[in-house]
Amino acid sequence: MQRTLIAAVLQAHAPQSSVTVCGWIRTRRNAKGFCCLELNDGSCLATVQCIVDEGTPAFTALGAANTGAGLRVEGSLAASPGRGQAWELRVMNVEVYGVADP
Image (cartoon, rainbow, N blue to C red; front, side):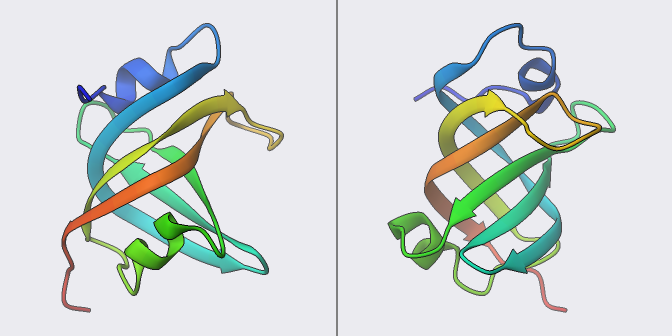
């Protein structure tokens, strides 16, 4: 699957069933039942929020990857219920390219 720049993802006009982005984790927040990642690829200053549900293969593949880790994320682009962002990526698959030493 071909990579899409985060700048292009954030300018989308409609949901998409399959999107692949690559970048670095800016922040990671673990919540009950899911994990939120803010991913940046340098194509713009903004980040895209990635939601990884607990109990999925993507959550297992994410492991202990934290701020600075390089990832490839595949998922579906959906309208975000949160304020301040139009879209979020519902993650189906994660590949960790490298972790950053905290």
